[in-house]
Length: 170
Ligand code: PNS
Image (tube, rainbow, N blue to C red; front, side, top):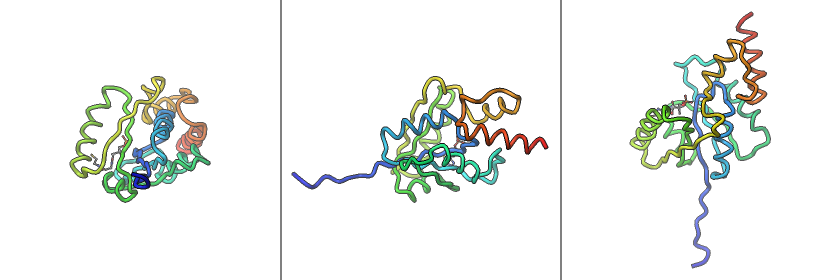
């Protein structure tokens, strides 16, 4: 039969705290782009957490990292991830899996999200091996203790960390 094919927009949500975005996150987004037409990066706005970067700053750093890339949209969200996904008409949530240690928490979260909404599928993706040790928390710790984070975060993030820590130490 001709002309009956339904075109489905391939859109995925990539949620996280992104405090700040690291090259590991960037690597997952780049891999996700091979599968999806659009990736909506969902930045969690959680007033209970006290992040280094404000929600606006985290969004801004991700936007700058992917400047000019129309396949990437950056949006903040609060409340349930499954609600955010359905508001954005996305049925897939991407999560990065670095090591077995990530698995238990991610497995729990994926199954809870499935219980909350059977429409949402979680897709786990592995970053390059060179980023498998990387986390936002470790990057912040290393930077704060004077270590080099050059290959670990986008340049805009490194610059933002320099000025953030300079202001915090004033
Ligand atoms: O980068 P993170 O901190 O590992 O991201 C965790 C995130 C934002 C994906 C998770 O905390 C989340 O989805 N929060 C939204 C609230 C929610 O839906 N909770 C139930 C999920 S099981």
